[in-house]
Image (cartoon, rainbow, N blue to C red):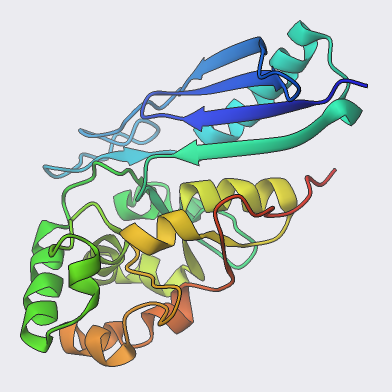
Amino acid sequence: MAKYTIGIDFGSLSGRAVLSDVADGRELASAVLDYPHAVMDTHLKDCDTLLPPNYALQDPADYLAVLETTIPKVMADAGVSPADVVGIAVDFTCCTLLPVDADGTPLCFKEEFRSTPLAYVLLWKHHAAQKYADRMNEVARERGEAFLSQVGGVISSEWEFPKIYQVLAEAPEVYEKARYFMEAADWITWMLCGEQKRSYQFAAYKALYDKETGYPTEDYFAAVDERLRHVVRDKLTPPVVGLGDRVGTVTA
């Protein structure tokens, strides 16, 4: 009996799915959905809130729409039974980050945050966290933090902790209500499988994670800003799973 996999690429403006035969890699069907909200860099589309310079936001509802639209389409076009799909894989450009509550609901889905820009997805090319990255770099150099050498010597404004720091500094109500900050790919697998895990390939580079030592220390974060001392404990949760490991099983 033939078996198949589905790969889903979440890009900056659309999500694309491809269904392939695992025996020989043949592509049997593909589908694309353009994001209804695209990239929000001047205003929030659903409420017309104006955005400051260097913002690049998305609505995670668009990611769910990709799943709901493209997966049924490729399976129907290929004439494949769900029972014969043995794997689904997803990818995003990281760090694409969103704040969520304890059950994974994005804060921007909640009425109280619909007009709060930093409650939305901070896309990889969101560059408004530069001054927070500058502060993190300054402290890391002063302290001689070893992790800097593992990431090319500079923490980018595109990465996870400068973005979290920006939320803390500029939208503390979002930071307080966020149970977790999630990479978008890890959030999608949580929604598919019902269990939260974090991918090593995202954590290792964009969240300064090391297999042996974990994330940077509480002392480092406290030196950056005392309010960040427990950011890993309070806003990130292990386990971090390795490249190629199964995250979970798709739920009903």
